Image (cartoon, rainbow, N blue to C red):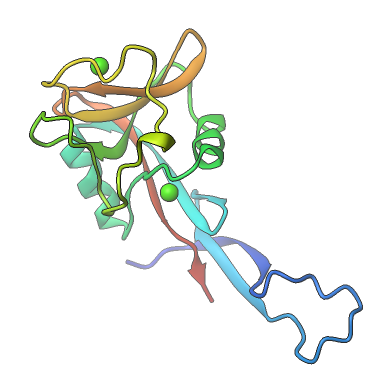
Length: 163
Ligand SMILES: [Ca+2]
Ligand SMILES: [Ca+2]
């Protein structure tokens, strides 16, 4: 798929800003960017889908763009995404419990780590609710398990494109 690129930034691959130090090798400049209408955060790109689909269809929609449903790895990532969402909506993320056994799985095989979860109070609430949305309740963002067939908006994630 040809993606139109309108956003780019310079990153220092070695993490050093080489501020006047006479290092032998100058910091290597690498251009990375996100497709048009995607948001860039910490070497990832995010797309907020405005149409509503089931969880499966939402994941397929991300796959078609060479992305996957959002995998929340850190609080910073969750906070960044939340700042870009509409409080009135719920958004599928790439977390599901296909068998309803409490075995939560991320779509990209990231291990489910209980210490990096952001369930709303009282969630997950129901073994028949096997797919996860980001939503607000009492004005805080968090995770809720909902039926996978519900139609919700969603967030896709992919790596930055390196030029
Ligand atoms: Ca992620
Ligand atoms: Ca629930």
